[in-house]
Length: 130
Image 1: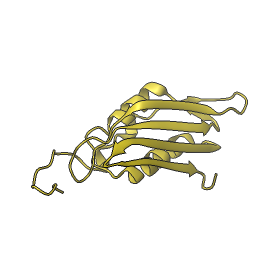
Image 2: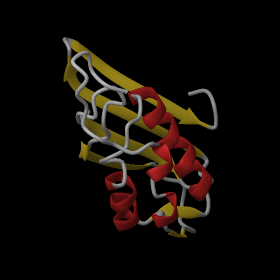
Image 3: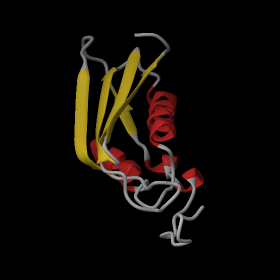
């Protein structure tokens, strides 16, 4: 899709997100909450192709698996040329991580930089609820 004057920066769709890079390792310790965060999450607006900069926060209580952080970096980086709505990006990350981790609880929050005068925060918790 193009902006009003017909210009847009090329981007790919959500199918370009590389879920296959996500790796996990065994976890057998006590129940704990794990928090990992980056201020370098930057998918692109599906209308203009311009970056949407955000802080991405992943909070989970592991079942039998933990996420390997280098693989999470590669996964997050694969969004850099992906045109995706902010709400859909948050949901996809939560669903992808839940699928590989099968944690007791997982919450993904994205806090997007101000754009057009609006601040946007999206949060998905799986399994459903709080």
